[in-house]
Image 1 (cartoon, rainbow, N blue to C red):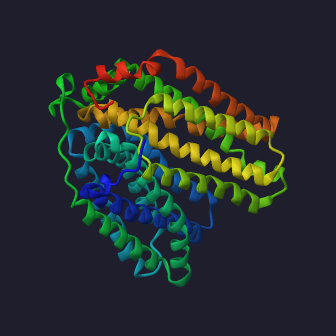
Image 2: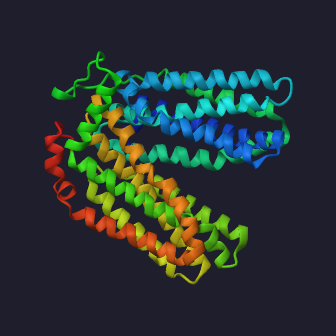
Length: 416
């Protein structure tokens, strides 16, 4: 571990980071504006839910296809193509907004297109980071990008609200258009090499989609550490997502009201930001799956402490620690994946693991609401924390994770 400044001399990364800030700001501003305009135009909560589904459904459906495409192309080109779609989409909304608010159908069309783009963005973005950074810079790069994400998540809603208050829909759309266009310019300045192909990981563009997809599945199945960490992430996400549903009930239990709920969310945000800053200045040169399991174990213990806490401000501080541990997991785990997965297979493998790891979240959220009603928020918090801690302990000792070095060496890479 140590403080490293070399990453800031990497022009590709600097352009990518600036592009991420602008694109992230545009995403947050437009997302809030779309939601606001749908409610203003229709007055319907059902219509808002339908628009959110228009974003979420294509993101899930297209994830595996996106992974194959990322492997067949240079990932920077995938990002540039996606940014062009953003620019043209927002440009269309901008033209429609000159006559007033854009029609409802155009808002749904924009939401659907942005949902499709998200499916392609995450595997492409991960592949770009793998190719433009050295393995010892993966955690620091993730930390810096997390700072960008946290910053836009805080600034974006405030900026969008100000634009909506002082101007109109057209003002918001024009501002978003400028952000996406600037992001596109910066993406075009990035140069990363094509995938390094190693032995059986060479991918022919003549293969069918099905064959390419099966190649990614086979790699996961034949690489026990990837399979084990994906399953442990599935269970950890199930535990933490279910417990986090209880925050609003926790605020009510303390009699803190909506303001207290806001404090709990702020605690998570502050903890996550502290973690992002920490990992942006302190580099873990050799991240391992066991580090992820230790962090998940600590997060589970914090959930247990939250369940037993009888003081509201202490609970806010503990929730902040959950934000910190969550940021650590989201820095270490992707860094290990970038070390283990060959570049030529990265898109397919990472899209499959993303789908597997995130699929437990909506299930946990749906179940937890009913459990909280039946057993109370503190018991659900304790159950979620205990399950995450136990899962981490079990995974810490299974051979695929404890013998990580050997698995890493057998995956045709010496980076770890």
